[in-house]
Image (cartoon, rainbow, N blue to C red; front, side):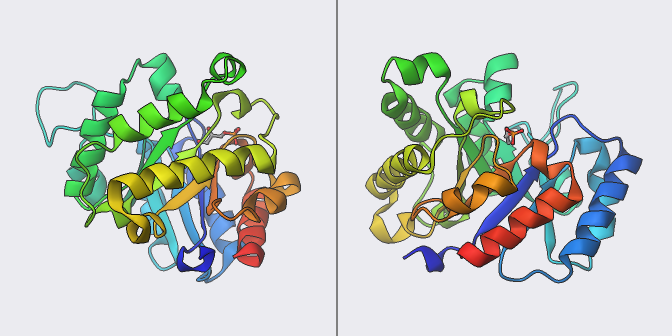
Length: 257
Ligand code: 13P
């Protein structure tokens, strides 16, 4: 079942790297990866580096993603970026609903849903992030939280466009902390997410949607995570800022796919 889904390793560089530093990092990754075809590789630098990194990876199989966007096509939204602007910079993916956006910028499920629909309409593949905080996990609410985030975040997405969705399960307590969910803990939630996707889109469509794990994934723990039946790749923060560790993750994903 798993091999109908191509593994995907995405690097979320967050607010790291100026455009010239981003070019250096992308150059090194590009060089080490060569012409990767078995694994989808996506780099998500800051907005300011999208254009320079796009130029650099244009002859490779590396794809480009943004870290956020506004749902409106244009307008008086100072400081915001639209889907069309991202498409023109050759972005194929956009991370939406990252827990840092939910936490620091108060993004609601309803707002994230507007973005998901707008991204799909513009042929951008959304990487929709979900995940519980430590308090929510300790209260036994993980399933409830993830269910709400999936159902509200994907409200109105059609079965036809669902194959362009990517979901990332990122337990908030595992992000940047060095604490990873055990493979069993992660698989349990990934399985629940696939079940929710099946309820909305049907089994066949749900079996095509990639569900990534994110949260302190690194070369030392990736193999056990990527072996799980519903873990189709990783959304990598810290370990994506070093070319070697990021490329090692791509290699591990290739072995496990
Ligand atoms: P870390 O890999 O640094 O924990 O970050 C994960 C993440 O938030 C990716 O979006």
